[in-house]
Structure formats: C-alpha cells, structure tokens
Length: 130
Image (cartoon, rainbow, N blue to C red; front, side, top):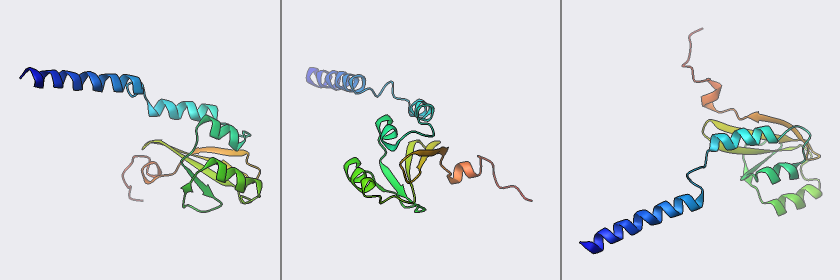
C-alpha cells in the first residue's frame, strides 16, 4: 500500500513540475492572438512577421489550399520570384482567433484580418428569414 501511495504522490508531483516548467499554466492563446495582431502591421516584411510568430502554413495566390511552411524553402522560392501573385500566412490561435496575414509580391504586409469561417460569417446568429 505504501508503494502505491508513493507512486501516486510521485506522479502528481511529476505532473505539477512538468506543467509549471512547460509553461502550460500561463498559456493563453487569446492573449497571444491579441499581442500578435497588435504587433503585426501593414508595411512589415514577411521576415519580420515570421520573427514574431512562424506560421505553420502558407497560401499562395488565390489558392485556398494551404501548404506547410518551411522558412528555408520559402526564402529560396521567394528569392526566385515564385510568389508574384502574393501569398498569405494563416494563423490559428483558437477556434475564435483565426487570422490571415496577406502579403504582396514584394513580401510586404498589405492586410491583417480575421479569417472568415462559417462561425464568424454567421456572427453567431441563426439564419434569419428575409
């Protein structure tokens, strides 16, 4: 019995240490989204935006299909002028905090906007009869 109690105490202490050391207790994705949108502004370069927060995905031109973002691959293709139609970095902080940073062909931010999802298209309202 003492062994079981000792193991339970050890597991609880381990979970607390990992949680506190890993920073999970103070993590607030909504606050991170707020700080991100306050920092990223029109006129910034794509490098400055990536330094603020590296995106997981990249969207090119009018394509709605995102592809994985790898900085070195992106930079090489950018130098070869592969993004003449511009590109977008989608950022997902929470279900309610989805943003898109849009760039022109020179890699300069032209827009930072909340991403359109079905939920925010309806603005939380049920369908209304005309």
